[in-house]
Amino acid sequence: MTVLELKENRAKLVHDARKLIDTADAEKRELTGEESHKVDELFAEADKLEARIDTAEKREAVEAAEGRLKQAERRTRPTLSKIEDEPNYSDALRCWLSRGVRGSRITGADVENAARCGLDIASNEIELSRPKISRRDMAKGNTAGVVGWTDFYTGFFEEMKSYGPVLSLISYRDSDNGQALPIPVMDDTANKAAILAEAAQTNAADVSVSSVTLNGFKYESKEVILSLELLADSSVDLEAYVAKAIAERFGRGWAEHVTIGTGSGQPFGIVTRATNSSVVAGGSAAAPTLTGDNLIDLAESLDDAYRAGPGVGFMMAPATMTKVRKLKDSNGQYLWQPSLQAGVPGTFYGFPMFRNQAMATSGANARIAVFGDFSKYLWRNVAGVQVYRLDQLRIRNGQISFLAFARGDGNLIQPNAVKYLAAPAS
Image 1 (cartoon, rainbow, N blue to C red):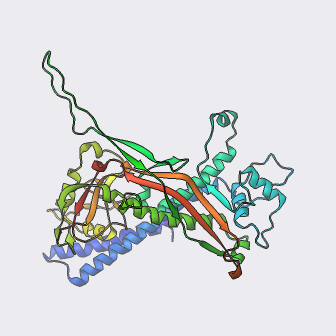
Image 2: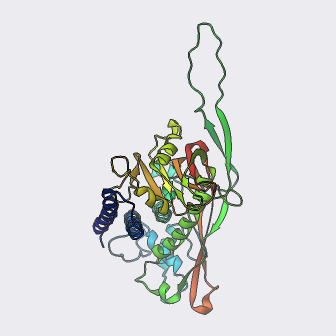
Image 3: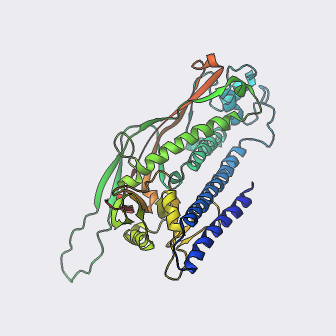
């Protein structure tokens, strides 16, 4: 199914759900249990299509990056006599992944090509990181290899973000090592200019300054296990298969900690560090109910200094978002406005609404919705991603596995930039 067909199907699902709600409103009654269930099903299906559309479009972006490294058809591998050819990074990574597998046919030219890409085929470890381009290299134009691995690095992280949408909203910083990294935090929203009488003395108004320290928690991907037959099959795009499997696992794990990390033995999450808006949903802790006024009050509780960024919006779990989609104003108009463009979220009160499966939907004082500038959350990548090929661990089963480690830490650098709305206490 094409992206266009997915968009058309999603629009029909939203239309059908709203038609049921409008019919009940016209008859001045609540939705029946069956109708309510049907509406929830339609919105849930629309959410699934929206996620598929978003993933498909992000995948196209990743494939475009990979396309810069590959020709439409895989060309003949470089020979020792053609050293003027540009190194082929895709082939180098594939040779490393399949080293030692019968039928992989790694030649001396393959070894040379990998070496020119900065990759040692004989090693059981490689590192996916963003290479540094020195001013000397830039001046001499020696950036071919650097650009190649940068594309792989970028593609890996783009793929990872597609499995954890919140990762597309935050800020990043790369570090060479995991030494404690203090980040200064300044908040001057409490100060403003004032009129000064002639010859009067000025008053001091210090900027509120503090710091947040980022470290480097070690994450593992868990083993990605492949059979020897799959590794030897030249028709399988090994480099993409393994990279995507690892990216998906890091994406899901990091997205959860970026959202609700406790800060104890793991990074702090956005929701954990957000500031209380003093807005409490109706209903009960087990079944909180949101009104349009609740969400408007949540948005208005945020200082104007944090409302202008491109990433400012609401964030909540899919189930909570479904409830918000049913809200109407006094004129019977829906408060939630669906987006007509895939990858661009619908809006409420003029701000985008972002899905996050890691967020709570109920519970005493649970933080069921947040609003703010999510770019104020900073994630620190430490020394790239280390990928290991475990040749002997599962060889008795005719398998080879791959394992990746990465270090990172994150925190909402400015807690006042995000406010949360809570469920009732009981």
